[in-house]
Image (spheres, helix red, strand yellow):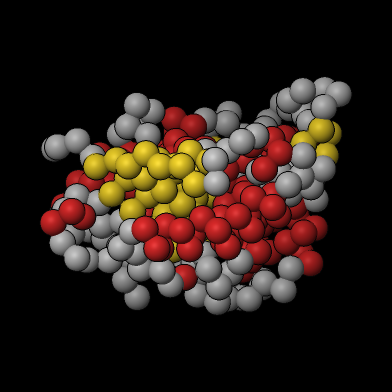
Length: 251
């Protein structure tokens, strides 16, 4: 298979890595868009064969062609965290808690820019947001903050251990607006940890149950728990093609 078509762009001083679907230049078709945290690490060809598998599924007609927008973070411990909280990785420092600012940027600045620059399908049903770890957390936070903009959500080992996130979700007026959420994690992530990460699995299960109690159904939220005793990007990323198929399946 040929090399993927990649655009390098900068918007408001933020680096973007944009993957165009095969055939984009030869048609006038419009495409779904998936916004990816951490510069698009979930589909980075040097990290996994995810993008290759996605392209193969698209070629076979099992997945629509789609545009991926990898968004670089200025400081993920600041931008991807919803609340100010002690940094469990660096004692004495704090998580910045600026997720609301970053989410507003994605929804109100970056998305309109991408929609004006590329041939997108701009509606909620064709707009996804995904990430791993803190990237999964901020993807869920952003989508639930802007439910009329982001309709397809992927959280891979999302950091739902983060203090206050369960309470934030409990206070949200969650409603089923046509959003779909795919979430996964290893069955024993956080086991043996003495910091907040020990709540990774129980809190992730709480999120799933909370959504089922507030308008989501098993056809609109899916949780996959795989065998892993640790936080593994390599294992979690293997589920991206499956997640995309489930999130963007035809009605």
